[in-house]
Amino acid sequence: MKIVMIFDQIQSGLGTKDDTMVPLTGKKEPVGPAVMMQPFLKEMDGHVIACLCCGNGTYLADPQEVSRKLCAMVKKLQPDVVICGPAFNFLDYGAMAARVADDINTTTGVKAFAAMSEENVDTIQEFKNKVAIVKTPKKGGLGLNDALKNICKMAKAMVEQDPALEKLKQEVCY
Picture 1: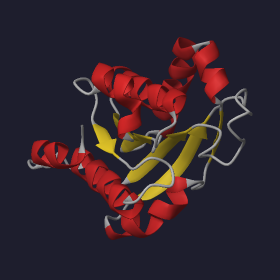
Picture 2 (picture 1 turned 180 degrees about the vertical axis):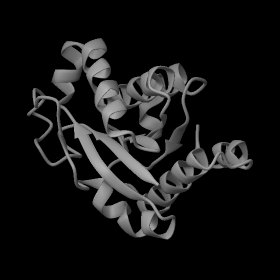
Picture 3 (picture 1 turned 90 degrees about the horizontal axis):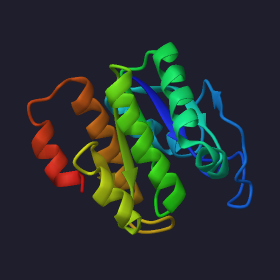
């Protein structure tokens, strides 16, 4: 299972909350939460082939263009699934994760979903009927390993078109 992950500048390790204008970029190796997910992905025969990222400010300056470029990058990389997040309780990143996951699903033929904490309530309400959004704790909250396992389970179920996918969504998504 080939996975692409989409991060903001913080989760990618390219900046802080104040470094919002990090340009759109990518790495062909796991970074940030992708590194923490490696043991869970290994159990599911999954591996991260690339991590794409940009600053929140870069995204907010032109969401449509950034999403279009991310979708083009996903088409070129041809993963089995795209994970947008985990965005934790970062509101701008949560909005980017849900919007980009929805755009990937509707324009690329690649399956995508988002992951974030309940603090992203407005984004969750806007997108929960359009894209799967896996529950995570807020940054530094309890339950991170369980959330990362659930993200991996969702990726595998989507790729394999598992008949239990809807049940899994009820258990781990908003």
